[in-house]
Image (tube, rainbow, N blue to C red; front, side, top):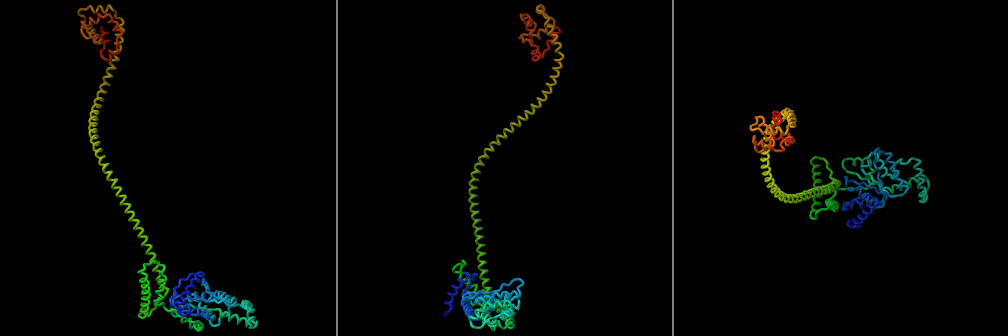
Length: 471
């Protein structure tokens, strides 16, 4: 392939095919990554090719191993830890692995990381797989017999005989050639050193690939790719990338200084750099969302202020018109108040006069009531005399009238009675001369008989019956 520029587009195409068939991986093929990828791929293409990948977390050991296995046509086998996962469960999983590489004759990469070491005994099993290609006592006798019978025909065709020993050796050799153990371990602390000392197969039967810290070009490439889809101003994109590289490198430098002064390690891993980029993207999106919300709130507030100003202007116009109408109404009200005031004074005067008149009426009513009672009493007394006078009037005769008229000077009682009759009849001349004229009238006696005594009594209040009775 001559150089990395020629390798890079090929692996980019292979990564696209891998992402279509497997869980998506977002890889940046900078020069160091291509170097590790081609190295792992070359190891997997070799028979009995095993690798020990040493690097801190986030270096890309597992991702590059999976892509290298896909490129080389190897399947990937990886255990899944569960609660209570022990040596027996580990061996049961390995039976599935050996079924694929021994019976089905598949090329398989067994990816084993330091997080899979739930028990140090697992490393002893892995050590045996590296040194001999087989796990001791993996199969029971009956299971081993099934495995031998499964490859017997192939052994016979290859001319190795049909004995159990020959079939088993053939099976183990096939497993050794098809199995590719890739160990992804972290160099942090003394754990890896101790494990390599206790299990020498981890070093003697593997190709060791050290994942060193990413150089600046790698950091710059990763930042450029991960920020490629982010909406950033063109003039600031390179500056932001350089700042991220500078921040990561400065932490690495201060970590070295921290170790020199305090003899304590602070590991700066590529995973930290990826988290730094991810947190920057997350914070940028969140802050832009907040700014957008604030802008929307501010815009909404300004719109409300504009609407309020328009409403205030409309209200001011309406208020000006209302003020004019109120002023006109106020003048009318003041005029009406003047009228009401004058009317009130007049009413009060009339009320005062009415009260005084009411008082006078009450006094007059009381007086009239007294007079009424007195008049009724007098009437009650006068009625017998009136009735007697009426009876006496019936006994008067024309000769009696003639006799009275003949008097030159009548008695005082006769004269007074005649004057009373004159008054009742409303004669103009009251006296004896007028009385004689009245007595001389032809219908005088009849006029007395038909005279309305009630009218006489009511309007003149003169008791003629009394006088007549004295006649």
